[in-house]
Image 1: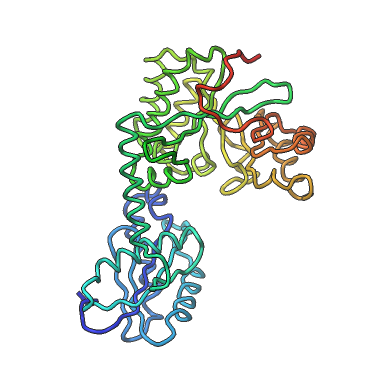
Image 2: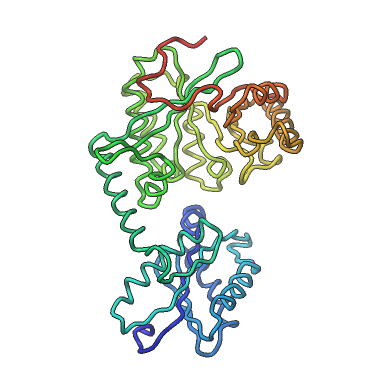
Amino acid sequence: MYLEKPGMANVCCVHIENLDFLSRHYGMMMRIQCKRSITQVLQPVLGANEKLFQLPGNELLLVLSGPDTAARLHHLVAFLRSQEIRWNNSVLNLEYGISWGRVRAQDGNLYHTLGQLSWLAEQAGEAGQILKLDNGQVEAFDQTSEQVVLLNRIKHALDDDGFVLYAQPIRKPTGEGYYEILSRLVDANGMVTPDKFIPVLTQFNLSKRFDMQVLEKLFLSLDAFPGQRFSVNLMPYTLMQKESAAEIIALFRRYRVNVKRIIVEITEEQAFSNSDVSIKNLNRLREFGCQIAIDDFGTGYANYERLKRVEADIIKIDGSFVRDVLTDPMDAMIIRSICELAKVQNLEVVAEFVETKEQQALLTELGVHYMQGYLIDKPRPLCEIGYHTEA
């Protein structure tokens, strides 16, 4: 192996952040061609003694020479981001996580260090930065170990019914509404919130198992909440599995659940996906009678042209537009325009992160139907919500 030669090497790990998602849409050949294209872009700008290696998965490895590695790397990354990587005449909007460090093979920890760089590159992608591995920072291996511990906790929770359902109300000013189902991992070591465990579920392809457990757990509890409606999130990986819609419909039938009581909540990414499997699953659920809600609307893929042809019943305006709606005229204008177009499409509109009565009053004036946030109520264990019947 090149890196096992004596001496110190400046090694950079390039993690292609969204390659898994894109390959699920476009197929494995896109993944292969994408990495080849990146190699072809970078190879001509490398020095005579610099090397580029394709690694399995989502990563490439650069070995750079010269004294100012950080500046050189920033230049290379800027150049890479300026290039268009295409697949079948479509531009792939690639996102990169970059890490680097000095590696000495004779220290005996080459593969350990490469593992640290790989983990750090993933974190760099989330942070939008180039991160350096050095002795002054907390070791990436420690963080990786924490992730392994969390993965084991998640697996035990899936095996031993360790996920607890929470519910947060979504209400009209009149009080009519429904609840969004949320989850917490609870075990002997304490509670873990979704922002911590969902990325691990996604990374290790446990999303569908989790989603199906949440649905089944909710369906088993419904008799305690006559008349209540609930929305349940489905993650992208779940809808990308061919039999997901059929399995969800089978759950409805097994537990004799009225389909009108359940709203399926998906992300913008899923709503405007080009994945045939995802689209077929969503269409089948809608044909069965499920309402579809699009979460975090306005933050990513959505635009007016797409909203014109959206196949959904409810859109949830992301809290980033709601937070400053009282002081930012642009946020208010965006919310009003979304509501006006939603009205034409017969879509109901939910505003997330509503915290004050002043926000609620303005959002109602702008055309929002439902509010969700701490003004209405915080998430509570499902067993604690009121047992009253909605109007």
